[in-house]
Amino acid sequence: MSTTKVLLTLALTATWLAFMPTTAAAQEATWENEPQLVEWGVVEFTTPTKVFDRILWGEYVLVHDRVWEEEGKPCTRIHERDNSKPGGVGDIVVAFYCDLRSGIVPTEQLAVFSKRTGATMGIMREMTRYQFAGRTEEHKVPAGAKAGRPH
Image (cartoon, rainbow, N blue to C red; front, side):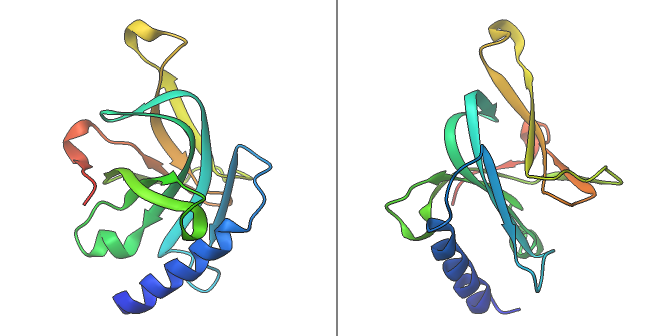
C-alpha cells in the first residue's frame, strides 16, 4: 500500500472518528479490509499515567501502525485528543517500539494496563501494555531504551 493511500485512509478514518460518540473510557476501530496495518482507539487515562517521561491524564488516541514499523519508525503512537482538528487526532505526545506478545486471551474492548509506581503509590500509574479488542496479541511498553520521540 502506498504512503499516499495510507495517509488518505488515515485522514478519512480520523474524520469519521470526530463524529463517534464518546460514551466509554475506551473506544477503538480497525480497518476492516487490512486490520493488521493500522489499529487505533480512544483511551481515557482517569489517573495520571506515566509513559516514558510523559505524564498522561485525560483522553488520547492510541495508534499501532505496522506501516510506520516497516519504515523503521516507532510502531506505537499516543496522540493528544483534540476535537478542533480533523478526526480529533492531535499532535503526537509519545511514540515507541512495542514488544509484541501473542497467545493472549482476547478482550472485548481496547484495554490499557498500568501499575502503581514507586513513591507515588496509588496516585501515579505507569502504562505497561495494551491490547485491542478481539486480538490475541498484546503490545508491551518496553524499557526506555526503545522509546521514540515525536517527529
